[in-house]
Length: 374
Image (cartoon, rainbow, N blue to C red):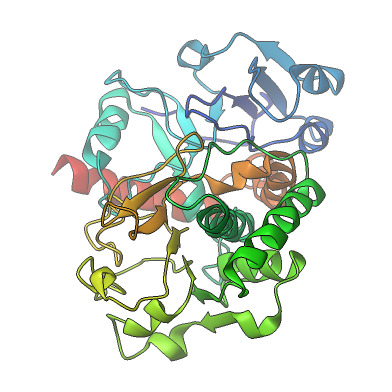
């Protein structure tokens, strides 16, 4: 069984693992956050990882212990293994306590297999998506940056459709900072608007949440007038889908957090409407393997090297973006914001390991574990 975290002389040991997801450059703890944790008595091991947005040397400089890539399975039993995205493909039992986005508590593809590995090894998953405060709000999330980056990719895709019709958006690479991203989009947008003779109309679903606010922020920063941004949230969607009005906009950005089954927003048949304006969909929510996905045709994930696919196939189809780790477009800023937000909760691992946030996460894991193994 997993050793219980107790108030003891041995320090809390966080083990920052290297990511295995292709094109993932973010990290859950930046060196500044590590320095604060170590000052509070934590021990931090950091796996070497050349793709990380922060060089290994910067962790070493603040006093972290640098360890070999991918050695977390043999880490000390009391180490908490901390990553962001999925673990390497394997069916090996998981013996440690893990912190990452497991994407396995809402019935997503492969959920039983992943939880089965924890069941066999006696480890635990404290899922980052479900660390909440007493009001039920997540303590740390990439939502704002996901919306920000999603809107960026949506606009770049629309621009590419105008400037290079009939081609797919080329591979995306991370930007050093927000300023570089905004500058690049402005150049593309100016050229595309000349060709199209119109500013793109963008509709955001879930516009009032973190993710939706991020999308709004990007659209304003690249200089599109407010009149081109249509914001929908609970009020506009309470009647339930489908919503033919979505087809009247150039770009549709889906930012809703799916917690229960809802009717689809759009169906593939609706995309065949002859006079539709819609040419780009960015599914930031990216519930591609969720059985209740409200965009049922967005059922495969795209990647940074191939950001879009077209539905229905052909020159007049809609370009769909379903990248499930959009914030890695701006990896450093995304990581810094996330680490800053998560830090107070990580501090509780030492001072109050049974604090409500951790207690709820542990109970949820065990509830899902018994569902998976029933």
